[in-house]
Length: 173
Image (cartoon, rainbow, N blue to C red; front, side, top):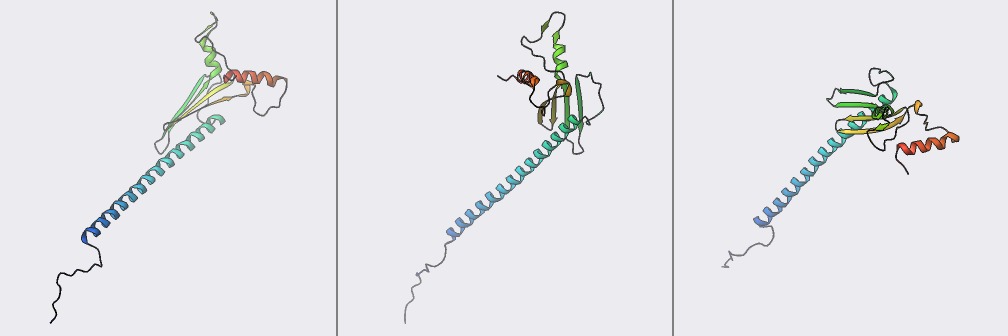
């Protein structure tokens, strides 16, 4: 009769400790993976929201430049403000300021002094357009026909003078 060795162990297979460590590593990896997916979807929502706000700001800028933003104002108005709320609840505000009229008001014609020592008066028809939409602020300077500055005009005798004036306005050189 042969005696069996009851203490002999099989070396094939994993111990319970090895299985638990492997499951813990897999669990942590899955948790990190789903966390990254959630963060990326939140980031995508923020980017989409920002893109919508930029589109609204661009639309309001174009409407202001075309003069179809709101009620008509008299030609002498120095500042025009339009504001509202979209159906999504986004507040917007557009301000048009006639920089020429604003600068003229700052000059005391009787004492020939200005509020600022080196104030330069911009060309007539120079307008600052400020758009504020949901935390985004865009400022644009544009010139009406009264200013005499046209982007498509060809070079002539007056264009050098207009370039000098434009350089003064934008503080170039």
